[in-house]
Image (cartoon, rainbow, N blue to C red):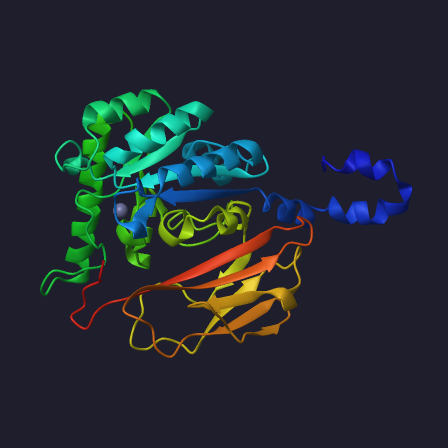
Length: 359
Ligand SMILES: [Zn+2]
Protein backbone atom coordinates (compact mmCIF):
# COMPACT_ATOMS: atom_id res chain seq x y z
CA UNK A 1 0.00 0.00 0.00
CA UNK A 2 1.12 3.53 -0.68
CA UNK A 3 2.77 4.70 2.55
CA UNK A 4 1.00 8.05 2.48
CA UNK A 5 -2.44 6.35 2.43
CA UNK A 6 -3.13 6.97 6.14
CA UNK A 7 -2.36 10.63 5.75
CA UNK A 8 -4.60 10.67 2.67
CA UNK A 9 -7.68 9.27 4.36
CA UNK A 10 -7.26 11.70 7.25
CA UNK A 11 -7.86 14.61 4.91
CA UNK A 12 -10.63 14.21 2.35
CA UNK A 13 -9.77 17.57 0.82
CA UNK A 14 -6.57 16.25 -0.67
CA UNK A 15 -7.99 12.87 -1.66
CA UNK A 16 -7.55 13.40 -5.40
CA UNK A 17 -3.97 14.48 -4.94
CA UNK A 18 -3.46 11.42 -2.78
CA UNK A 19 -4.95 9.10 -5.39
CA UNK A 20 -2.48 10.54 -7.84
CA UNK A 21 0.40 10.23 -5.41
CA UNK A 22 -0.48 6.58 -4.73
CA UNK A 23 -0.31 5.75 -8.44
CA UNK A 24 2.44 3.35 -9.48
CA UNK A 25 4.16 6.10 -11.46
CA UNK A 26 4.45 8.35 -8.42
CA UNK A 27 5.55 5.44 -6.26
CA UNK A 28 8.29 4.75 -8.75
CA UNK A 29 9.39 8.36 -8.82
CA UNK A 30 9.29 8.54 -5.04
CA UNK A 31 11.47 5.44 -4.72
CA UNK A 32 13.97 7.16 -6.97
CA UNK A 33 14.54 9.67 -4.20
CA UNK A 34 16.12 6.95 -2.07
CA UNK A 35 19.51 8.42 -2.12
CA UNK A 36 23.03 8.25 -0.80
CA UNK A 37 26.28 10.16 -1.13
CA UNK A 38 29.80 8.74 -1.19
CA UNK A 39 32.83 10.73 -0.11
CA UNK A 40 36.31 10.05 -1.43
CA UNK A 41 39.45 10.77 0.57
CA UNK A 42 43.10 9.98 -0.16
CA UNK A 43 45.66 11.16 2.41
CA UNK A 44 44.59 12.30 5.85
CA UNK A 45 47.74 14.16 6.82
CA UNK A 46 49.33 17.60 6.84
CA UNK A 47 52.65 16.61 5.27
CA UNK A 48 51.45 14.98 2.02
CA UNK A 49 50.61 16.55 -1.40
CA UNK A 50 47.96 19.21 -0.74
CA UNK A 51 45.94 18.32 -3.83
CA UNK A 52 45.00 14.87 -2.47
CA UNK A 53 45.18 15.55 1.26
CA UNK A 54 42.72 16.37 4.01
CA UNK A 55 44.30 17.79 7.15
CA UNK A 56 43.61 15.64 10.24
CA UNK A 57 41.85 18.52 12.05
CA UNK A 58 39.66 19.16 8.98
CA UNK A 59 38.91 15.44 8.64
CA UNK A 60 37.85 15.33 12.31
CA UNK A 61 35.60 18.33 11.62
CA UNK A 62 33.99 16.50 8.66
CA UNK A 63 33.30 13.41 10.78
CA UNK A 64 31.90 15.43 13.70
CA UNK A 65 29.50 17.09 11.25
CA UNK A 66 28.47 13.73 9.76
CA UNK A 67 27.93 12.26 13.25
CA UNK A 68 25.49 15.03 14.01
CA UNK A 69 23.59 15.25 10.71
CA UNK A 70 24.05 12.06 8.64
CA UNK A 71 23.74 8.29 8.68
CA UNK A 72 27.21 6.96 7.95
CA UNK A 73 26.76 3.46 6.53
CA UNK A 74 28.99 0.74 5.09
CA UNK A 75 29.42 1.26 1.35
CA UNK A 76 28.22 -2.32 0.86
CA UNK A 77 24.92 -1.70 2.68
CA UNK A 78 24.26 1.39 0.57
CA UNK A 79 25.09 -0.29 -2.75
CA UNK A 80 23.05 -3.39 -1.94
CA UNK A 81 20.02 -1.41 -0.78
CA UNK A 82 20.07 0.82 -3.85
CA UNK A 83 20.54 -2.12 -6.22
CA UNK A 84 17.61 -3.93 -4.58
CA UNK A 85 15.44 -0.80 -4.67
CA UNK A 86 15.19 -0.80 -0.88
CA UNK A 87 14.87 2.41 1.12
CA UNK A 88 17.77 4.03 2.89
CA UNK A 89 17.66 6.39 5.84
CA UNK A 90 17.62 10.02 4.82
CA UNK A 91 21.13 11.45 4.42
CA UNK A 92 22.81 8.06 4.05
CA UNK A 93 26.50 8.53 3.35
CA UNK A 94 29.54 6.27 2.87
CA UNK A 95 33.17 7.17 3.41
CA UNK A 96 35.90 5.84 1.15
CA UNK A 97 39.68 6.23 0.94
CA UNK A 98 41.75 5.52 -2.15
CA UNK A 99 45.34 4.21 -2.28
CA UNK A 100 45.85 2.53 1.12
CA UNK A 101 48.07 5.16 2.72
CA UNK A 102 49.41 4.44 6.23
CA UNK A 103 48.12 7.84 7.37
CA UNK A 104 44.55 6.49 7.06
CA UNK A 105 45.36 4.28 10.04
CA UNK A 106 47.29 6.95 11.93
CA UNK A 107 45.01 9.92 11.37
CA UNK A 108 41.58 8.74 10.17
CA UNK A 109 41.00 5.35 11.80
CA UNK A 110 40.96 6.68 15.42
CA UNK A 111 38.30 9.23 14.43
CA UNK A 112 36.24 6.54 12.71
CA UNK A 113 36.53 4.37 15.85
CA UNK A 114 35.42 7.29 17.99
CA UNK A 115 32.14 7.51 16.06
CA UNK A 116 31.93 3.82 15.20
CA UNK A 117 31.86 4.78 11.50
CA UNK A 118 32.38 2.06 8.87
CA UNK A 119 34.52 2.89 5.84
CA UNK A 120 36.04 1.38 2.71
CA UNK A 121 39.66 1.57 1.51
CA UNK A 122 40.49 0.93 -2.16
CA UNK A 123 44.00 -0.52 -2.39
CA UNK A 124 46.63 -1.81 -4.81
CA UNK A 125 47.28 -5.20 -3.14
CA UNK A 126 50.90 -5.65 -4.37
CA UNK A 127 51.83 -2.27 -2.84
CA UNK A 128 50.52 -3.12 0.64
CA UNK A 129 53.42 -3.59 3.06
CA UNK A 130 55.88 -2.83 0.26
CA UNK A 131 55.73 0.87 -0.55
CA UNK A 132 56.90 2.96 2.43
CA UNK A 133 53.78 5.10 2.70
CA UNK A 134 51.36 2.16 2.52
CA UNK A 135 49.52 0.16 5.15
CA UNK A 136 50.81 -3.31 5.95
CA UNK A 137 48.66 -6.45 5.70
CA UNK A 138 48.66 -6.75 9.51
CA UNK A 139 47.27 -3.24 9.70
CA UNK A 140 44.71 -4.05 7.02
CA UNK A 141 43.54 -7.06 9.10
CA UNK A 142 43.30 -5.00 12.26
CA UNK A 143 41.36 -2.21 10.52
CA UNK A 144 39.14 -4.79 8.85
CA UNK A 145 38.28 -6.26 12.26
CA UNK A 146 37.43 -2.75 13.47
CA UNK A 147 34.90 -1.66 10.85
CA UNK A 148 36.83 -1.09 7.62
CA UNK A 149 36.32 -2.90 4.32
CA UNK A 150 38.99 -3.25 1.66
CA UNK A 151 38.36 -3.15 -2.07
CA UNK A 152 40.05 -3.10 -5.46
CA UNK A 153 42.06 -0.22 -6.93
CA UNK A 154 43.88 -2.40 -9.54
CA UNK A 155 47.28 -4.04 -9.09
CA UNK A 156 49.41 -1.04 -9.89
CA UNK A 157 47.27 2.10 -10.17
CA UNK A 158 47.57 2.08 -13.96
CA UNK A 159 45.78 4.51 -16.26
CA UNK A 160 43.16 2.04 -17.49
CA UNK A 161 42.74 3.90 -20.78
CA UNK A 162 46.43 3.85 -21.77
CA UNK A 163 47.31 1.47 -24.62
CA UNK A 164 50.58 -0.34 -25.08
CA UNK A 165 52.33 0.22 -28.42
CA UNK A 166 50.13 -1.12 -31.26
CA UNK A 167 47.82 -2.86 -28.77
CA UNK A 168 44.46 -3.90 -30.25
CA UNK A 169 41.15 -3.06 -28.55
CA UNK A 170 40.72 -6.72 -27.57
CA UNK A 171 44.24 -7.03 -26.15
CA UNK A 172 43.86 -3.77 -24.23
CA UNK A 173 40.55 -4.82 -22.64
CA UNK A 174 41.86 -8.29 -21.78
CA UNK A 175 44.97 -6.78 -20.13
CA UNK A 176 42.93 -4.32 -18.06
CA UNK A 177 40.39 -6.91 -16.95
CA UNK A 178 43.16 -9.39 -16.05
CA UNK A 179 44.83 -6.69 -13.95
CA UNK A 180 41.60 -6.02 -12.03
CA UNK A 181 40.73 -9.72 -11.59
CA UNK A 182 44.26 -10.48 -10.35
CA UNK A 183 44.04 -7.60 -7.84
CA UNK A 184 40.65 -8.91 -6.67
CA UNK A 185 42.07 -12.39 -6.24
CA UNK A 186 45.09 -11.16 -4.22
CA UNK A 187 42.79 -9.04 -2.06
CA UNK A 188 40.40 -11.94 -1.43
CA UNK A 189 43.34 -14.18 -0.42
CA UNK A 190 44.38 -11.66 2.22
CA UNK A 191 41.10 -10.34 3.64
CA UNK A 192 38.89 -13.37 3.04
CA UNK A 193 36.15 -11.71 1.03
CA UNK A 194 35.66 -10.28 -2.44
CA UNK A 195 33.33 -7.29 -2.70
CA UNK A 196 34.09 -6.85 -6.41
CA UNK A 197 34.13 -3.10 -5.91
CA UNK A 198 36.64 -1.33 -8.14
CA UNK A 199 37.65 2.32 -7.77
CA UNK A 200 39.04 3.42 -11.12
CA UNK A 201 42.57 4.85 -10.72
CA UNK A 202 42.42 8.61 -11.45
CA UNK A 203 38.66 8.09 -11.83
CA UNK A 204 39.20 7.13 -15.49
CA UNK A 205 37.10 4.58 -17.38
CA UNK A 206 35.32 4.14 -20.69
CA UNK A 207 32.21 2.32 -21.82
CA UNK A 208 34.04 -0.89 -22.79
CA UNK A 209 35.80 -1.40 -19.48
CA UNK A 210 32.69 -0.42 -17.54
CA UNK A 211 30.50 -2.94 -19.37
CA UNK A 212 33.09 -5.71 -19.14
CA UNK A 213 33.27 -5.19 -15.36
CA UNK A 214 29.50 -5.03 -14.93
CA UNK A 215 29.23 -8.31 -16.85
CA UNK A 216 31.68 -9.85 -14.37
CA UNK A 217 29.66 -8.67 -11.38
CA UNK A 218 31.75 -5.65 -10.40
CA UNK A 219 30.55 -2.28 -9.21
CA UNK A 220 32.68 0.62 -10.47
CA UNK A 221 33.41 3.79 -8.50
CA UNK A 222 34.50 6.97 -10.21
CA UNK A 223 35.39 10.42 -8.92
CA UNK A 224 32.92 13.04 -9.96
CA UNK A 225 30.03 14.84 -8.32
CA UNK A 226 26.59 13.48 -7.58
CA UNK A 227 24.35 11.53 -5.29
CA UNK A 228 23.67 7.83 -5.90
CA UNK A 229 20.21 6.31 -6.38
CA UNK A 230 18.74 3.07 -7.67
CA UNK A 231 18.78 4.52 -11.20
CA UNK A 232 22.51 5.30 -11.04
CA UNK A 233 25.04 3.70 -13.37
CA UNK A 234 26.58 1.02 -11.14
CA UNK A 235 29.53 0.81 -13.51
CA UNK A 236 30.54 4.38 -12.65
CA UNK A 237 29.13 5.50 -9.33
CA UNK A 238 29.91 9.11 -8.46
CA UNK A 239 31.96 9.99 -5.41
CA UNK A 240 32.56 13.52 -4.16
CA UNK A 241 36.26 14.22 -3.61
CA UNK A 242 36.67 15.55 -0.05
CA UNK A 243 40.38 16.35 -0.09
CA UNK A 244 42.55 19.15 -1.44
CA UNK A 245 40.51 22.16 -2.51
CA UNK A 246 37.29 20.20 -1.91
CA UNK A 247 37.98 19.71 1.81
CA UNK A 248 36.31 22.94 2.92
CA UNK A 249 33.36 21.84 5.04
CA UNK A 250 31.35 24.94 4.09
CA UNK A 251 31.05 23.81 0.46
CA UNK A 252 31.26 20.10 1.24
CA UNK A 253 28.09 20.33 3.37
CA UNK A 254 25.98 21.04 0.28
CA UNK A 255 27.53 18.07 -1.51
CA UNK A 256 26.99 15.77 1.47
CA UNK A 257 23.28 16.64 1.34
CA UNK A 258 23.00 16.38 -2.45
CA UNK A 259 20.52 14.19 -4.32
CA UNK A 260 21.09 11.96 -7.34
CA UNK A 261 19.96 13.87 -10.43
CA UNK A 262 17.16 11.89 -12.08
CA UNK A 263 18.66 11.75 -15.56
CA UNK A 264 16.57 9.41 -17.72
CA UNK A 265 18.86 9.65 -20.72
CA UNK A 266 22.19 11.26 -21.61
CA UNK A 267 23.29 11.54 -25.25
CA UNK A 268 26.93 11.23 -24.13
CA UNK A 269 27.55 7.54 -23.52
CA UNK A 270 31.35 7.53 -23.30
CA UNK A 271 33.46 9.98 -21.31
CA UNK A 272 36.50 9.69 -23.61
CA UNK A 273 36.93 12.77 -25.81
CA UNK A 274 37.26 11.87 -29.48
CA UNK A 275 38.03 13.95 -32.57
CA UNK A 276 34.38 13.93 -33.64
CA UNK A 277 32.57 15.06 -30.50
CA UNK A 278 28.95 16.18 -30.98
CA UNK A 279 28.07 19.86 -30.52
CA UNK A 280 25.78 19.21 -27.55
CA UNK A 281 25.02 16.97 -24.62
CA UNK A 282 21.29 16.26 -24.34
CA UNK A 283 19.90 15.28 -20.95
CA UNK A 284 16.37 13.94 -20.57
CA UNK A 285 15.31 14.61 -17.00
CA UNK A 286 12.63 13.46 -14.60
CA UNK A 287 11.68 16.94 -13.42
CA UNK A 288 8.98 15.99 -10.93
CA UNK A 289 10.80 17.65 -8.03
CA UNK A 290 12.48 20.65 -9.66
CA UNK A 291 11.92 23.46 -12.13
CA UNK A 292 13.65 22.96 -15.48
CA UNK A 293 14.28 26.72 -15.58
CA UNK A 294 16.42 26.43 -12.46
CA UNK A 295 18.86 23.84 -13.77
CA UNK A 296 22.36 25.34 -13.92
CA UNK A 297 25.31 23.71 -15.66
CA UNK A 298 28.92 24.69 -15.15
CA UNK A 299 32.11 24.17 -17.09
CA UNK A 300 35.44 25.15 -15.52
CA UNK A 301 33.68 27.42 -13.03
CA UNK A 302 31.63 29.23 -15.70
CA UNK A 303 27.89 28.91 -16.00
CA UNK A 304 26.89 27.48 -19.39
CA UNK A 305 24.15 28.71 -21.73
CA UNK A 306 21.71 25.82 -21.91
CA UNK A 307 18.40 25.45 -23.73
CA UNK A 308 15.39 23.42 -22.66
CA UNK A 309 12.43 21.84 -24.37
CA UNK A 310 9.99 20.20 -21.97
CA UNK A 311 12.10 17.92 -19.80
CA UNK A 312 15.01 17.85 -22.26
CA UNK A 313 18.03 20.01 -21.49
CA UNK A 314 20.58 20.75 -24.19
CA UNK A 315 24.06 21.65 -23.00
CA UNK A 316 26.55 22.88 -25.62
CA UNK A 317 29.83 20.97 -25.36
CA UNK A 318 33.04 22.99 -25.16
CA UNK A 319 34.76 23.45 -28.54
CA UNK A 320 38.05 22.40 -27.01
CA UNK A 321 38.57 20.04 -24.11
CA UNK A 322 41.70 20.27 -21.96
CA UNK A 323 44.05 17.29 -21.92
CA UNK A 324 43.27 15.02 -18.97
CA UNK A 325 40.15 15.09 -16.83
CA UNK A 326 37.38 17.68 -16.94
CA UNK A 327 33.66 17.67 -16.28
CA UNK A 328 30.38 19.46 -16.77
CA UNK A 329 28.37 19.77 -13.54
CA UNK A 330 24.65 20.45 -13.44
CA UNK A 331 22.67 21.26 -10.30
CA UNK A 332 19.12 22.24 -9.46
CA UNK A 333 17.36 22.85 -6.13
CA UNK A 334 14.80 20.27 -4.97
CA UNK A 335 11.28 21.57 -4.50
CA UNK A 336 10.46 18.96 -1.85
CA UNK A 337 13.74 18.88 0.07
CA UNK A 338 14.34 22.51 0.94
CA UNK A 339 17.97 23.56 0.73
CA UNK A 340 19.09 20.39 -1.06
CA UNK A 341 20.30 20.10 -4.65
CA UNK A 342 20.19 17.47 -7.35
CA UNK A 343 23.70 17.16 -8.68
CA UNK A 344 24.95 15.59 -11.92
CA UNK A 345 28.38 15.37 -13.40
CA UNK A 346 29.49 14.30 -16.86
CA UNK A 347 33.22 13.55 -16.87
CA UNK A 348 35.45 13.86 -19.95
CA UNK A 349 38.87 12.25 -20.41
CA UNK A 350 41.11 13.55 -23.18
CA UNK A 351 44.37 11.82 -24.09
CA UNK A 352 47.61 13.58 -24.91
CA UNK A 353 48.70 13.68 -28.57
CA UNK A 354 50.56 10.37 -28.04
CA UNK A 355 47.34 8.71 -26.79
CA UNK A 356 48.36 8.50 -23.12
CA UNK A 357 46.48 10.04 -20.19
CA UNK A 358 48.20 12.36 -17.69
CA UNK A 359 48.14 11.83 -13.88
ZN1 LIG B 1 44.14 6.15 -6.51
